Amino acid sequence: MVTHLTHLSWSQRAMLIMGSASLMALWLLAPALAHASDLSNALRSSPYVLLMRHALAPGVGDPAHYTLADCKSQRNLNDEGRQQALRIGTWLKQQGVASAQVYASPWCRCKDTAELLKFDGFKVEASLASFFDDMSKAKESNMKLQQFIAERIKTKGQQALILVTHHVNIYEYMGENIGSGDMVLVKVNAQGGAVSHQTIRRPE
Image 1 (cartoon, rainbow, N blue to C red):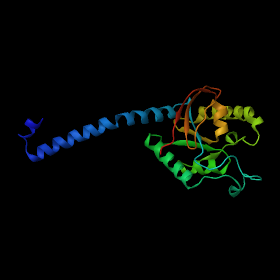
Image 2 (tube, helix red, strand yellow):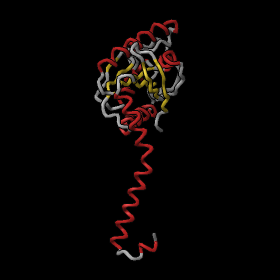
Image 3 (cartoon, rainbow, N blue to C red):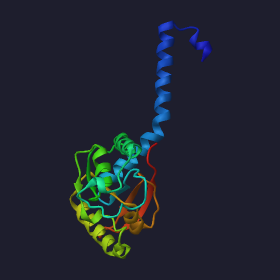
């Protein structure tokens, strides 16, 4: 290559080097682009849903006598958690997830996470509510979640379906422990039950 370059003008050499650099950049990006296509393509199809644990909200459970009507009475996202949620939303868009139906638990830490993803708004969904205060409701809550997913996958079209909820809900649904802001890509059946899943760590 060096021998051939010596016979070219400076402008020709520059064009050749720039072309090689562009090809190298595309080659390095190929794995990332393939991953982006896999995730966005899956979420555009009906049998897939993305479950997400709310972003970082330090602590366990909620303070005594909290109410859903008063965010100040609950355990909430801290500054790091808010930044996590923003990064997750940006990362999802970078993966090719351009449009999404986003639903959140009635808890403020979930609603704030859903809002900070910066899609076209979100809706509160009761079946995503935490049952941490009464674990005897786990099976009932899980059945309601499956019923909700079964209904939504029929009508979501090519939009991604993103559900922002709590650790206990995700664990009951698929037996998976995940960290704050982590996600699970789930393939579901017609009844809304999990067929298979893949854990996706939150972007740092």
